Length: 256
Length: 308
Image (cartoon, rainbow over all chains, first blue to last red):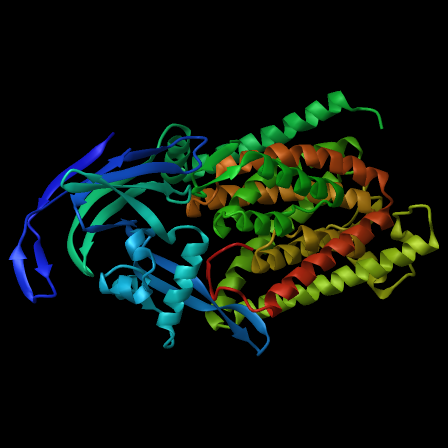
C-alpha cells in the first residue's frame, strides 16, 4: 500500500535575483504511507505519513485537494427587515471537496498574499471556483463557503507542519496528515510544492485513496444501488427492534 | 474509541452520545406521543450530520420508537385503532395534497417566509392555549380528569353532532362522524407536508381539542399513526434521495426504543392536565427556539440545504 514516486524534475531553477535562468535538475521524492485509507465500521479518520526528499535549501509545502464538485447552498438573508431566513441559493462550480495546506516553519509566518503569490491558499482557490448567484456578492459568498468548509474541518491551513532533516546533500521532509472522517471515499491529490525564494520550482503529486470497506461499503452499495429495498429493510428492522424492545420490557417489568 | 462510521452521513460519531440522544428523544416520544423530529434533527445537525440525512434517518428510527411506544400504550389500553386508521387515511390524502401545494407556493417566491411565520404563530397559539387551559384544569381539579365532556354545548359541539355517519369510538369514549377524523387528518397532513414536519405537534392538540379525545388515548393513538407515516417517509427518502443512514438509525433506535417504553410508563402515571401542560411547555420552547433562530443573525451566511 506504500505509494512512492521518484521524479527527477527538469524544472528550471529560476535565479530571480540575477534575472537569469539556468536548467538545474531537481531530484525529489514524495511518499504516502499508507496510500490507501480504508473506511471500516469503526473508522474515525485516518492518519497518513507523508515523506520525501528535496534539494537542500528548498522549502516544501504539502497541498491536499479533493475532487472538484458542484455545491448548492442556501443563502441567508433578511426578510421583512427583521427575520433571517433562506432567501436563495448559491452554486459553487469546481470547488474541491477538501483543501488543506501543510506549511514548513519558514513559510508559516507569511500572509495570505504570500501564499497567493505561490498560487496556493484561499485567494488562489477563489480564481478556480465559479460562484453563481444573483447579485454581486460572489467574493463574500466564497468567503462564507470557505468558513463553512473550515467549520467542518475540510478546508484548513496547518502552519509549522512540514519538518526537515538533513540527509547527505539532499534534505528529507516529513509531515503527518490526518484525514478527518468527513473526507468521503474518493481520490485526493497530495502535492509537494517545492519553493525557493518565493518561486515555485516544481510540483510532485501522489494520489491518496480513501475507500469504504466491509460493512460501510455494503450499506453504501445497498443504499445507492437498491434504494427502495434498502428503505423497506431499514423500516422492517426498525419495526422489529421496536417490537423486540416492547416484548423485552413486558417480560422484565410487568407490574406497575 | 466507541466510534462508528455512518456511510450515508459520511462521518463518524460516538456511539454513547447517539444512544443518549436517542434515549432522551424516545422518552419524550413515549410520554407525549410526538415523533421527536423537532428535537432530534437539530441535535444531529449540530453533531455534524448533513441536514437531509439527519431528517431521513430520524424518520427511520421513529419507526422503531413509535412501534415500541405503540406496543407499550396498547398494553395500557391507550390506542384507538379505529380512530388512528381514519386519521391516517386523511393524513395520507392531506400529505399528497400538501406536497402539491408546496410546489405552487415555492414557485410563487415568498413561500418560505409565509410557512415559517405561520408555523411560529401556530405553535405559539396552540402552546399558549394548551398551557392556559391545562393550568386552569389543574387548579380546578387536583385529581386528574381527562374527559372534557363537561364542556358547554358550544356551536362546535352542535356542528359535530349534526354531521352524518356518526359512530362510536370505544377506546376514546366519544361519538363523532366518520367525516371528522378524515377531514382533520387531511388538514393535519396538508400542514405537516407544507411545514416539512411529522405532524405530531399539530395532531395531538387537534385530537384533544377538536375530537375531544382523552389525553392518554391521544398519545397512544398518535404514536400508532406516526409509525405508518414514518415507514412511508423512510422508504420514500431511501428510494428517491438516498439519505437514510441505517447505521445512524440503528444507534438511535437502540436508545429510543428503550426510552419510549419508560416514556409510556411515565405518561400513564401523569394526569391528563399535567401531560398537557408539559407538552404545551415543550411546544412553546420549540416556538421560542424557532423565533430566536429567525431573529438572531446567523454566524455564516450560507448553509447546507435540507432539514426541518
